[in-house]
Length: 198
Image (cartoon, rainbow, N blue to C red; front, side, top):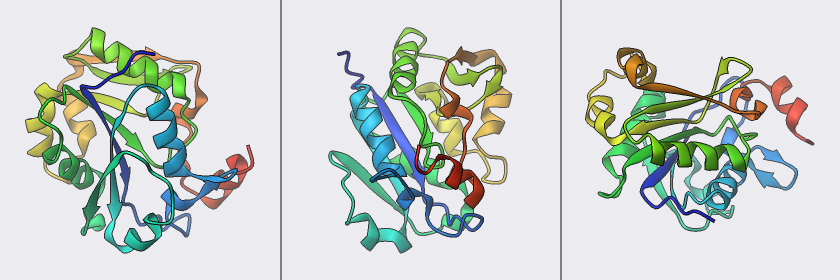
């Protein structure tokens, strides 16, 4: 199986999950937590450089789950939003990282094959922003090339990473997938219960 050693997956898992009532990274499908599922599928897809950005309040709980061969970044200001977590991870990326695969912990249903497809497409189109689509709807995870890392680092937190995508629409490559998981974000208790035992 192809290995994607120059791509780093960044899992944003520092949110306070106020709407769902408990930290999303510790929610489970079957016997695995969201973050365990995402890490396992990434590594099976050949993406072995995985960084998990987590909330400092969850440090002790994180020790109780299995996340082999991952790097961890503590976010002490989760209130600053997703872009802040992304920026923390970008500053800590290995020097050889050519692209960042940005994964959200509330998208635990993304298939292994989707991660593999995006990593392979990034290798073929190394300057592109990749966004998966399912039946015409844009989803996650997205791939950002190294050439945009500095711009992402200097983007105001209030704008978010999507502002960089909008600014560079000429670099965006939409990748159609058959994976509904790219558009299934789990934000409420009702959404979680629908997929919990799947």
